[in-house]
Image (tube, rainbow, N blue to C red; front, side, top):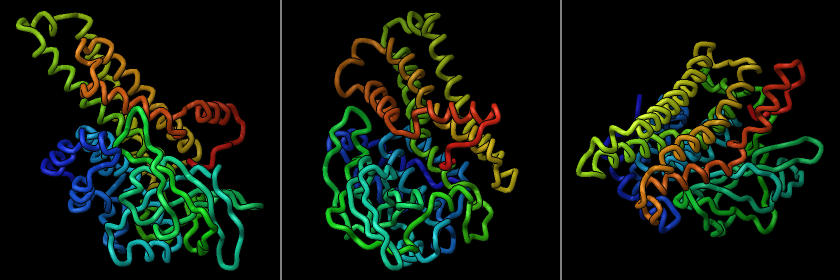
Length: 371
């Protein structure tokens, strides 16, 4: 049930360096991912999608990240939006996918720069949203905002209603093109193109496939950290290769006890993270995609610590990667930057999720509704 093949992965890998320079994933890579069906993996068959399981989707995202973490980052985020649209009003999915199942949607859920006013049959929306990964490739955007007296909603907006401002000058994940989305003057968003956080929390949907009864947040919180697993796999492969090629006497390095221990540690980190990732979704599937609140809270915390564990792994390798690794353009250095950059995403900051897990385990009420 996978969509990627070696030809697609080769295209993605070949464009990795150029992605960093242009601060955008190459159009050729995006087109190859469209053609193979990656962006349709979570889309309902009703709209031309594949309805693959999250397990298949995240296995492909990991493989994609081994070719290039920036491409895996934007593509996972873009593709998972098909799941959110599947649990919104059917008219929203028709607006986006009615003519083309490969229509791409970006997002920025942080509501701090949004201005929302209630209007007849909808809302008036304006503001600025940062970190909209892959937005240049997309013709729609999902933007977060707070409705007075109600709470959080996501607003689906066509490209004609917003502009993209080039702000993405960063230390890692340069290729994600996570620029700002700006709506200068208020635009109308009909109610059917909005999604209440409470509806997402309650898992309301109109799909026959029980997979869409799974909390959609459980898919999103994984797309912004799973790429680090694939990137760490790539770094480990590069590190092992460098140990065997760096000396005329390979045994001098591969026989080093510290080197062996570091490799073992990183292999274990990767195995641990993949095991927990797939076990979470296997458990949900075994329960007909209806996890308990306690499970959702635990899964949320486990997702949030992926980047920190990957940072531990890449630091373990980079510390002894050799003198060449400090020069710009070294592949392990780029992975080090990419993984560390991923920690800046709010979903990868585990403190609040740890507190909620601990508090609910001790009998207090849940305070996280994006689970």
